[in-house]
Figure 1 (cartoon, rainbow, N blue to C red):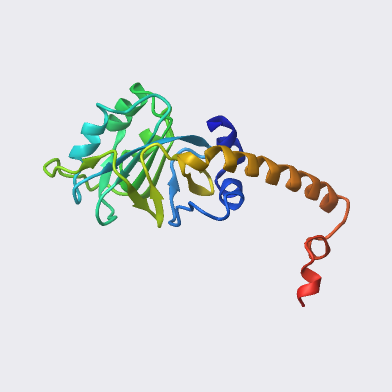
Figure 2 (figure 1 turned 30 degrees about the horizontal axis):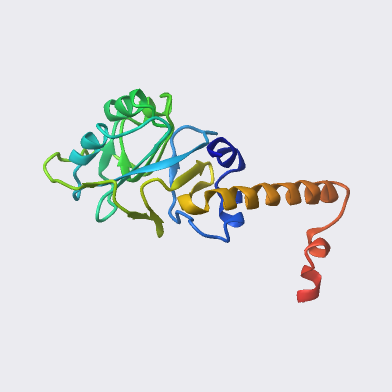
Amino acid sequence: MKRELARLGAATVYEASGRRGLVDVELKQLVPHSRACGPARTVRCGQDDNLMVHAAMTRLQPGEVLVLTMPEPRPVALLGDLLLTQAIARGAVAVLVDAAVRDAEELAEMAVPVWARWIRSRGAAKDVVGELDVPVVVGGAAIHPGDLVVLDADGATVVAAARAEAVLAASLEREEKERVKRAQLEAGALSWHLDGLDARV
């Protein structure tokens, strides 16, 4: 399921899920052409502090997407190459950061892709206790621990764990419809007619 959702991509999954779960912020994809999907391991850091990112490494499981947040998203780096090295060793498949990262060139060459709001040199403190494995909100999308996060060049879409099978089925159906439509467009048809848009004018 996770591999299929990653292949289908954030936009298709978002549309097929009834336009739900969009992470509606601009994200920097540090590894071009990367795709990922996995259950969320959520972290709510203290403001401008990444103590809990270090703590999360003790719980991170293979196949998970590490989701890093703080009360107010700011361009403070919660993740760099040393923390990502630990996430890779723990088997993470991706990291979503609702803040900044640094060591960007190194991150771009590492085995696990990262999506972040900003790239900044400013580092975080390690003083404030936050929370692990709690619901968080990124770009208006609620992310509960275990929800599936789909990431690619278009951004991120969140799929509630309870809806994952239904959303996958709807996404595959949408993919097939688009395959048929693409063939029609290549043959010269126009979406203006196929989609009935001409009737709206």
